[in-house]
Image (cartoon, rainbow, N blue to C red; front, side, top):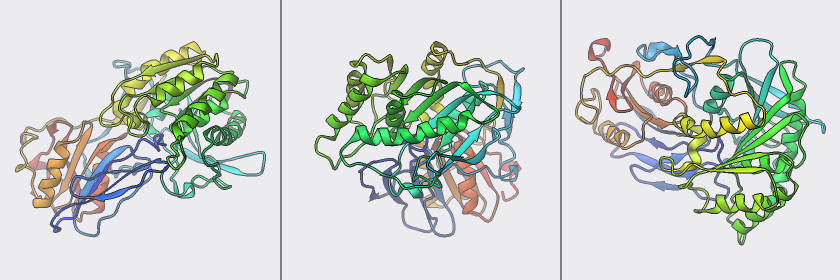
Length: 449
């Protein structure tokens, strides 16, 4: 299921002038779960955002899945600027070389031996390299794989680019704009993982030939279905691959009898043939896997004699499956990942400072819990603000003089998501009203006040 494409995006959609908010709930990368329509407060866990989102304003409501929108120009919110920041967990390292927030993102088509092409997103530092390689293997969203947006795991990319890595995110056959068709064997998790691992092997070979890539220093990281595929790859590594990392890996096929036992058996088979060390990370409140399943899968894998380490990182917000796509999760997963990278001879020291967005300072305009204080909101907007106050930090609420509003929670940059979504619904410029637990609105800076 999710990767960053699979950790999900909770979304609330609203329109000013309606008697209530219309919500839709579903989970990305469900592999069999059905979505459902619900009342106010329902949430859509969408594909690639891993962010909770809501908006209101004139026009028709709609839900947009896929990558986090590119931030609007500063005209929408001049008080929330992009600034250079050191990598998470390395405060005070300000003498590092700067890398723009876009991390030199580009999309390439990697050729495969069979004549196919894999749509692949690349992030990297400036310069000619050669850079060590992180290959991120995505999850599977609900719906047709060909309709799945390319994965953009920005929190992961930022941490690794800041350590000097080339981060590659190949979409496997039949996903997004990659050629071929997605082929899933019913009720056979082991074979499904192997087929996905074929594409990973093709990506490893193609990426190793890039002139700025260090083919002797490669690590693989997979999330959800991508985690299953990454572990399946570990029995046939390229000589440059040092290790594999599995975040909440598996495949949910609830239409199959005893699908959990089938999944455990798949990992048991992989463990007997594994040739690479692996790191496994599973949480305690994963909404995709029944409690304890991740640990049973690990035990079956480790019983085969593989060099595997399990990290139980406990509960995370409302769903530990969303950890990897959420910037707030970095402080949880980076320490064990860094320790594993060190063990397999991969770099972990910060080398670059990647631009990141900082919250504007509190303005003192009002207490964040005062629902009557935000300007321009109608009753539906004030109801949405109450919903915003129930969300986890990181969170942001944006509004405009035309009455539009939007809030976002989690993901990589809820401030940009809230502003962009608000602006799509607004005739007037949108500005941030509240971020996390503070009001940042300044009435004197707004031309519509």
